[in-house]
Length: 80
Image 1 (cartoon, rainbow, N blue to C red):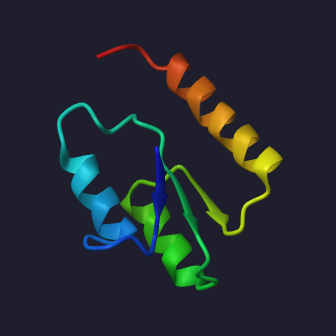
Image 2 (image 1 turned 90 degrees about the horizontal axis):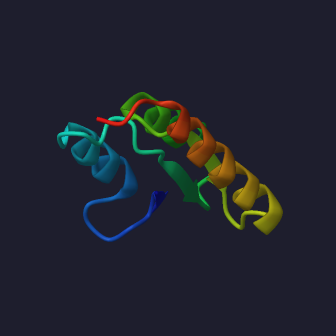
């Protein structure tokens, strides 16, 4: 899942927080992408359950590689 920090309400951090509370969503890969250069945003995203973080504009090749890596890791977990 791709999430932007500066989404309309709820923002990306609140979205991750609420999404992770849903049953069965603890292993869904989440990549936050944002133009915000604040390291605090990155650290909060990780603490709330983001698996990766990219600053925008993201390089398309790097974005694809990160998403592919997240999906590969998810496939390694047993299905619930």
